Length: 248
Length: 319
Image (cartoon, rainbow over all chains, first blue to last red; front, side, top):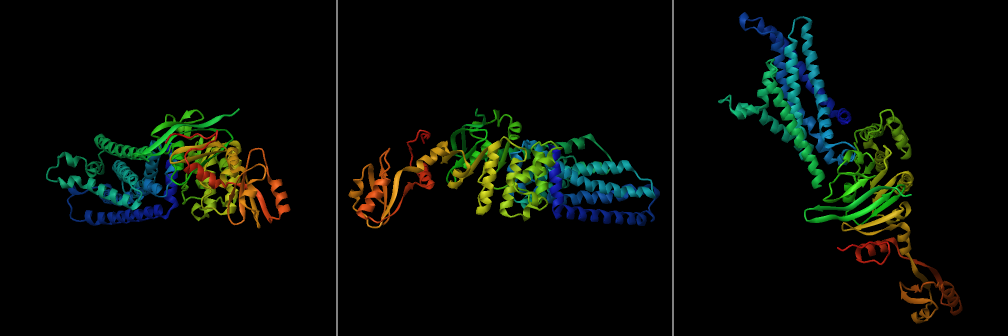
């Protein structure tokens, strides 16, 4: 049943121009940063850099593209997640889901999964794009995989938070703005405590945990952090929808 | 051999300190259309939301074919088709797409989905609209999609909240026909505040006012209250009221409008013939004579505003 909800969600993402436009714009952005990365590589590396300081093409281009991708997701995900529940609230379609034999958990997880599948199209695209470097070079696929995993987890965390804010209001735009602000704050938490790199507050920063992946390190503690983050917001969303049923 | 498909047991719902619905109990049998009547804000929609599991009752419970909707929501909900007052349609989809989604959500087997969609479209007269976006359909067709969505999984109980609101007369007739058809095989609960609709479509009626059931009985019970023991007589040269009153069997005479009289007669008498005879003899100028029908509206007003009502089938509850 989760899959059915996810399918419906994907279908409605592609039924409106919104989904296509966001997909196209993001791919354009990733593509141009990729191109720029490749060009810069030759400029920088052919210069007077000492051999010891030289980095591989995977890391050089990968850093640019994945760096910009994580930043652009910050804008894209709230725009995509804003409609998930608030739009249904607005057009009063929630009873359709509530009166079908689907549990609230299935509804929320299904919607979340639909969005993740949509976003993983982007991640897959970036992976394929960077893999083309392999034609004339020998690239580090492990680095790409770790970055892809990190990006998906980051996007999933964004989506979970986005769904929660979407369940709070019936105005999609308000949901988008709220989730954007919240995400922006969570991303930069470690920057506020730059002077104390090990302060616990910096520890909840999303960016801090994404950084490990972007260095090519898959650490179970970061994975657990993301899973906890996602679970927390999905549970909050389910609670919110349940209180609709209880309080009316 | 009546089979109960739905029973509401002491259903109550509070919003803050206000009771939106209070101690509503009723049963629904298979193959029956139950009309749910009441003025605006009487608690019809709230009751329906509770019956379909969209709203948790403060007290009491709902059993769908013996399955408690609070304990086993999934199994119970699979047996219900629900069309809320505001149609829950995803307008970015085509009719086919939407109905396929609805079928999938209601556990229709994937090999059977296509068939289910086709048959629901047939029943609701939507076959020629299959590939149109719901957004572009007229109000009436959107309503049909709403009904199609509610019957796609062949549920035991179909619950329709004001299904004919905002439709033109032809569409209303078609939808009523459809509801009657559905009612033959399934049980239907239909809420409305259009009285003739109830008379045309429903087998049983339930009137709710301020969250409480004030009338519960078959449609015949309601009809009986309409055809009282009164005649409406029009006379252009009327005699005195006393003259009329002296006719055998007449209990009381009341002047309605100019030249019109409401004549109430005693049980087992029908003084129509006598009146016509006298009118011809005494040239009262009789131009109209017919049974005086209390309109459903009057009964409705009576039931919902005057507190007690003497009828065997009426259950009045202490407020």
